[in-house]
Image 1 (cartoon, each protein chain N blue to C red):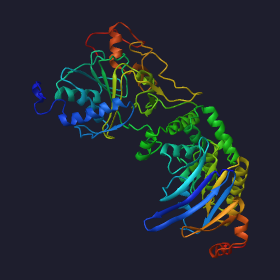
Image 2: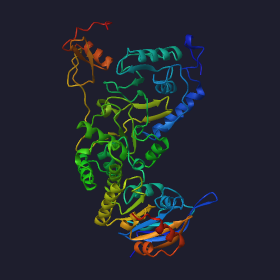
Image 3: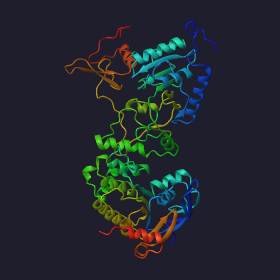
Image 4: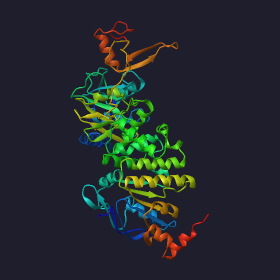
Length: 256
Length: 296
């Protein structure tokens, strides 16, 4: 089976400091990979390198494109990479404001990706936007409201709808539940889990919240100081942590 | 260049120095070679404020020859402040002949309208442009809009039209209606009413100058200019559903003029030359008076 994403020795340095170093892994279709670690451990740097937002100093990021099979996205031309960014890839930001157009209605936000790939029929665009708002539990009568009038949880769900509307195959998520209260988090996670399973999405989720990966991720990578210190099946890593840092991380979770 | 008009000895022909005019002409030529592409140019300080047509004036200065006949219109009218002062400016600094008749002019500088009379191959239409970037209000970063133009990522333009339909039930953008030029660049046609958009496929050269924003762009004759729209909400060149009250024209773009505070109003051609020539030919509208030579 061909992996959807194959990462080989990706390194990114900020001057003399390590962003992330020599990270390799494979992600298969329908698989959800979690990346956990403390602040500054290089999680977001790694995600940025994979999603084409940062240029790594070394390594390869091979993506299984629809037309030509595995290709190194770092060597692609910018138009090709941006095309991937609005068709097969999706990026969910921690702060919904980074991923939404705040001056455009919810429907316009969801429709933007459709129009970016050539949809020119207003009725169909709007129909799909309403359908997707429904899937992320935003009622139809909010379709013409701007994201600024939405709560934090709704903004995050709107961002997810906006990203998934073109049927991507790989979703990058950077702390998708950050800054949300626990009940809203739980609903969002439930929703995400449903969507990921239903659409057969592959996803890479960066988070420091172990509950998120426990619920969503099939596999887990633990990062510290820019290096991957432990990787494996989620339950295995969380229930039987081997590396000292992972043990610390798991035991740091407050038990209520 | 020498100049034989007596009153302009203090200025070079058409105000700008020859080096500057060369620089602007290079930008114009590049703009004509790549229709719809915004060419940066080193806009000069002109003896009028930004927003009064400094871009158009610089382009006009660069293309004017001593034998040209110059016409200026502002919202279609030859006799408004902006039009009169720019016409006087070139009468003084270039000593060129000026006219109010569209057919006689070789260079026409315009603000917010395309003349009703069909323009010919030997004419140049110069637009004054306030904001040349059609994507500006959707994407504030210049670096990003340039990238979007270079990669032809124009989905965002339709987001604006989507918002229009979502809010108003129809595309409510009535002026500065975005167009796609020769299947490549999306261009702001300057704030002309969308009624004028179909006229942009014309025989004359069209030049666009944005002084404050330092951009020049151009349309060669017969360029393909398509107004953006949705399949189920097609582009429509709209105007007030009325005939001109002075000359009776039904095919021209109309201004609504409030005549008293009791609801009185009249619709008149915004193109004053078109209206005058129709009256001279004997047409008369509902509130018109018979035409007299020399009368306003």
